[in-house]
Image (cartoon, rainbow, N blue to C red):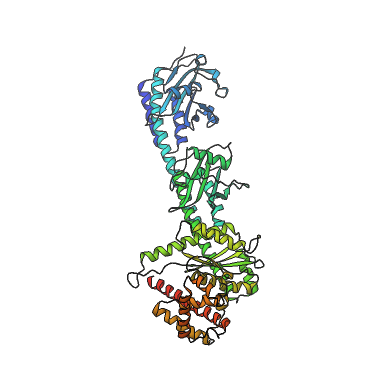
Length: 615
């Protein structure tokens, strides 16, 4: 049997040449092929194969020239063949002769293994002691490997391990640089997007391309608490709406992507089906504490830097979404404000109003009820002029919070409602429901009671009569405002009031203050007297007129003795120069409503001035 004699200095020479090959450049494929060529030459073997671990398999990365066409195609599982056995047991293998008779050897037709006589296979260990590859030599009879060949291959494996790790670090660094470069471009595109409809599809497409994902999708959180698909790459129709909060709640924890968790797999199967492969990644779209939605990706396997890139994309996208939402909200707010002002003044052109109404989804041909809400709290004094008290700030926060809760309830109960927010009030246009005109006031009262059940009632809400047509809508704004203010004054506190419910005070609202009225002038004397003495003469006279002069009924209404009532009425006649037995009771009753209404408005005005001073 022929054998080759090789001296120790030959081994060193080849090892030096292998070291030179490793140092020649960072390209791993070039390095491995150079090592294979040197090992084949040094050992005079038939073939040299270098396998590297990848995704739990041993993949042929470099082979002698005869088998170079199989690189990347031959894959072995742990324990499969002699190479797999070496990787699994972490021990070298040396078969001197009759290789195919060894039970560890597996026959591969593509490798011409029927010719093999002798085999050497050694593991390649990383610095951490993990098996990252295997080097296998095949020899055709009559050549046989010896102990010197095994030693040489073990030294070579140690050098290969360093080369693989260095090349991997270089590849990772190169990929990270490329990733950062593309990420920078994507960030600029995100910042330059002019609207959400342009932003989201671009992010989904470019993010998928950037990280090599099979799917990349963006879901946004809707007001009802569900996640709805807004953009997908590749495009798809009929995407599910995720309404189970347990599936995505954890994903909304800022800065914490979901991976290797049960919720991740369940959510991934909900989005893409139970037959999905690869690794799902979910990154929250969040701005501060506000959660906007999820950026979802499905990749073959997560690569270094991928999670960081996804986090950066999600952060930039979230900020851009929030920016566009604010812009759209401001644009819509301005549009609503202009529309409401034009309706209230009645000076807008029909075509212009119709165009504005169309953009807001308002049908001007439908019947509506005007809604007007104002804060209604006890007057709060600041400790120092020009400084705003904490109580005043809390009061403002309370009424705004209550208004927001009522608005949310109305939007759910009355589809098509449009709200206009002002500094000290909230206005709205409420379509009349199909169940009839009374359905709107009933719904608003119910929503107000539910929202204010565990909350300080600090809103006075006025509702107009049913309006149909531009002229009617213009009057409706005044009716709703009057119902809120006068209703709260008459009712003595916050609540929901209708214009119809103001009763005869509706007519007092229409009186012309420029018209001189002797009755009003006389009744003002009673107002002045009440301010000085704190009596209730005006209310006594109103109750007497409302009961048409029935003394017994008036006494019951006021809870006073008839003699006390007679004394008060006598004082009224004396102070106001009236003779109740001769006066025009209708004119006197109307004048009394006007004076009382004027007094209540003065009280409200003083209250508002006090609020402004507190602010």
